[in-house]
Amino acid sequence: MAAREVAFLIIFVALTFDFINGFHDAANSVATVVATRVLTPFQAVLWAAFFNFVSAFTFGTGVASTVGKGFVDVSLVTLPVITAGLIGAIVWDLITWRLGLPTSSSHALIGGYAGAALVHAGFKLGPANAFRGLVVGQWPKTLVFIVIAPLIGLVLAYALMIAVYWLFQNSTPSKMDKHFRRLQLLSAGMYSFAHGTNDAQKTMGIITGVLVAAGIQSEFHVPVWVVLSAHAAIALGTLSGGWRIVRTMGTRLTKLKPRGGFCAETAAASSILFATYLRLPVSTTHVIAGAIAGVGSVQRFKAVRWGLAGDIVWAWALTIPASAIIAGLAFLLIHSAA
Image 1 (cartoon, helix red, strand yellow):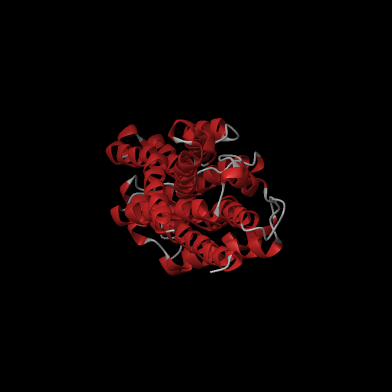
Image 2 (cartoon, rainbow, N blue to C red):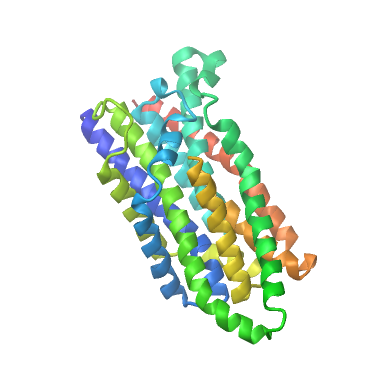
């Protein structure tokens, strides 16, 4: 099979990952608005998918460049490396979806890409030089934001909830919820918009890397058709839903009312858009989970099921190494079959 044909096959796999990303992260986009019964599940995924797609031309392609060039040595990136990286991310996403755990598709992609690059560098340069497959690049900022991003979401959601209670101190809970049922439509749209512009760019970075590795492009720049394809795939994935994770995020972590849903979504969207402005691939899953916990802790500390939150954190911590190991094994299989 010619290199160009292989490249387009890998691009299809990348768009499949993007679809699964939308499927997996649909819960993050719709859990709060479904849990508060502002929208039905079907209405919610339509709403989220629409904003996932319309975010295509808003924040440029800075995150795509970071993913494509900021973690691995591009001179060692080949089509098998990208293929194995995608396999690592997809397999980990499906495992955690089956378990109902809202892990990060973003960090699974980064981990898979890095794991495949490490094994390839080990083959090409010798095992002692395997880590030359990685570059310092954006690793420090990205690893720091694994912690900072959900904390920003948590703190901002907590502050918004305090402000809401102060502003509406003379209103009854039913009157508050009447206002916030309408406002939550805006906050849910804003969150889905932020989710689309950050997450779709990660797949754009991988696809552009494929184009460069296959010699179809000489330089790393994201074509318009890649932008549209990535956003279409993530929007279609969102339409398919991910109801196992919706239950974890929307009902099991803490009980939400419209005012809480509004604060959680607004806080999470603000944190994600800030990271996108910094050209960083942030985990939308981490951020919305932190924001939901921040909302719940305003009512009382025990309102958040911290045991479940701990399970989620463990899944977060395992995502990069687990997807890297799966991708490394996938690369070994591809290499041995070649």
